[in-house]
Image 1 (tube, rainbow, N blue to C red):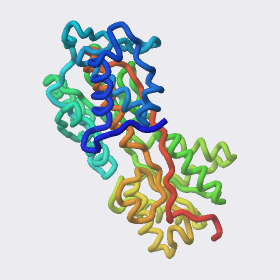
Image 2 (cartoon, one colour; image 1 turned 180 degrees about the vertical axis):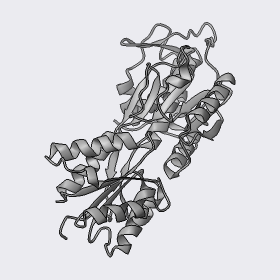
Image 3 (spheres, rainbow, N blue to C red; image 1 turned 60 degrees about the vertical axis):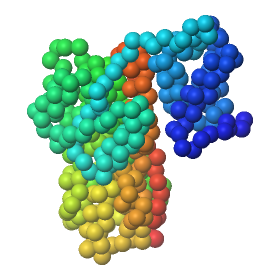
Amino acid sequence: MSQEPVDVNRYLYEQIYSALKEEILSGKYCKGDWFPPERVLKERFNTTHLTVRNALAKLVLEGYIERYSGKGTLVIYSRDRPASRKSSLKFPYAHLILTGLDEANAHILESLEAQLRKIPLPVHFSSHNGDLLLEESLYREAEAKGALIILEPAGSLESLVHGELPMRNTIVIRSDAVPIPFPCARVVVDNALGARKAVRYLLDLGHRTIALCNTGLPSAGDGIRQGFEEELASRGITDSGDLVEGCSPGGDGGRSAVGRILARREACRAFFCASDEIAASAIRGLREAGLSAGTDCSVIGYGNVRISEAMGLTTVDPGFDRLAECVLSIALEGMNRGALGEEEFRIPPELRIRDSSTSAGT
């Protein structure tokens, strides 16, 4: 089916919203009619379910349609009366609280600002650096001001609840490893799946001794190590304990980790790193040991940040742009119905193969 004409100067979901609104106002769809399903609109406009959902959410907000779970979308606007604006949830701003501002989180911040600008909703940013007390202080301040809170947690969220109605204006992002003791709006990257894809690729290249240069941050590290160990175990490799090194996210962390790994396993020629910054540092360490990534050994990063393409680094792309789209969808739906729901979006990472990986023995 051909794509509808679009204006490149406007966000796609707004174009879809305008086209559907015009069809309601023109009488093509009248009060009591059912809208086409999301999948039909997705094909008609040659776009994604999320984009269609965001367009429909704006029509709900303005009183043109109602959406019923399991049934469909019903037109409620009558040409005999103007569209009534329903009671909705409003936020003065969105407060993004992250573990830190490395390149990956900078990408998340940039993508979220671009998406939430469509509502429009300004974005404030804070970092708790893994400090639970600071996390709680930042959270309580944003909560008191009625902000939409987008949180990458430092650890278990029980300290933020205190027996109250849990996190009603909060979207938890990124972490698939931090325990959450109650249902809430959540967008997580399946880090374990991303790690399994990376390890599977290295195994398929012929490597049997694979090291993990991991970060200690709970937002990613636990899920990555889980996937690393699960994929090795699925191939009958269970002696990987001395091939796992914790290190700082950037700077000299990967270089030092590689040195320690080679001191224990001199023959190791495959290194999976929990961030692209760690991978870049690891490549420096390998160079100092007389090894070249992509020729003598394989290196895979995690994040698909700008440095990965510049270095020709094979990396796992966590899908941070999709994460931001999901946050927008949850925010719009919550604003429409007057409360955030308990949706959970799980984003499957994808492997981006570049020059830093090679077959074993080549």
